[in-house]
Image 1 (tube, helix red, strand yellow):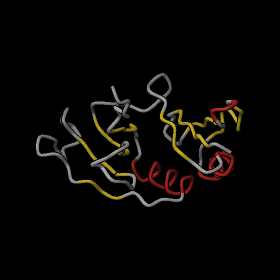
Image 2 (image 1 turned 90 degrees about the vertical axis):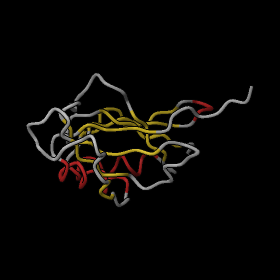
Image 3 (image 1 turned 60 degrees about the horizontal axis):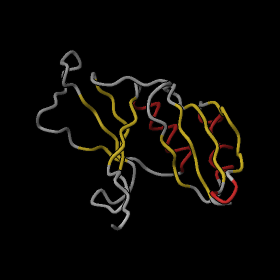
Image 4 (image 1 turned 120 degrees about the vertical axis):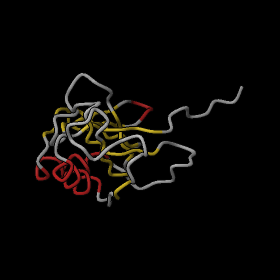
Length: 135
């Protein structure tokens, strides 16, 4: 059996889409784009199916995983959920941008031995996120 990455999509829940956009674009040095709302979702903020999305750059058809920031009535940001790690050349670089972008560094760059390095922060919405690098 050939091992392949089973992850295809990640959604990071946010309360304030504009604030979260600014944070991720600043820290990751990328530009997020508006994704069209799925037909079954609404723009009515009182509807249980309310949904807004901003996509991270990438090929959503794989391989690998695409992802978005999501403002929705189906999910709320905060600690205790899934922890997403972003790839970087040197995770210390992204971690150095976190506080100026309104986030908080939880764990600075740490060694994972032969598996590289990682660091964890909290975004402006209260979500824990990580960064991983091999140097």
